[in-house]
Length: 249
Image (tube, rainbow, N blue to C red; front, side):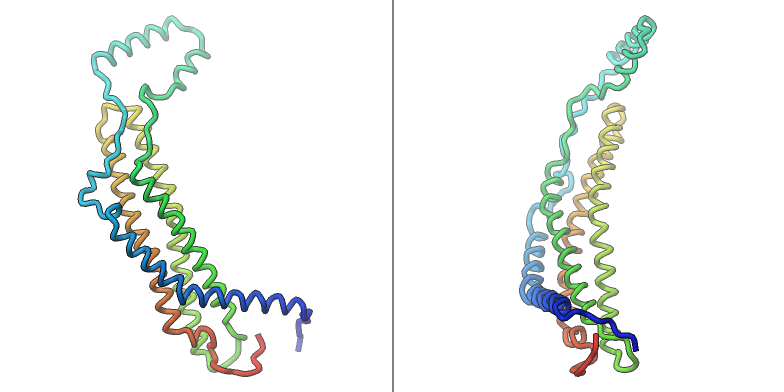
């Protein structure tokens, strides 16, 4: 039978890592997860996440609506200037100029909430990764019989994988909001007389506000579900085949 020779000092380092990981995981389950569940539940009850009317989220959109008469006069002057001006470089410079309004800021209320949310996303993904690694290190050598505990491990691992995929998507969701809002603001600045573009900016803010609340819920629920399922099946997860002695991993 082929055997892999492992140096004792190398195995000792792995054993130290395993023991440290087990200690951290048990600390997470014993105190950190319950604390995060309580903190996130309190966050969900704060006034900032319970706006009575989403219209309160409306951010100022400093894009002036042009006077049609002045715009027509301006367009005529521009056409006349283009006829007289044969300098292609100057024409190119004119075309590259931005809209005639000042800078349009982000929605401050949304940004403040995201500044609180993003560290929570990072934290829950890191803790989930740690617990997943702990679970994988509990998987015993593959052999026939007495595999019920292993099946429990597999089910919990599937749940963790699904949670990880969902939580990772939150970063993309946040980036997409800023990209879409930026496009909407640019269109509103380019065509300030079109009210739909202005309204689109506010609609995106309201949608992101709802999504932020849902993301906080999902993070709280992730901690709660992990805590519950691991606690209920802790013995099966840690010792899937019971107190088997002499097991080779």
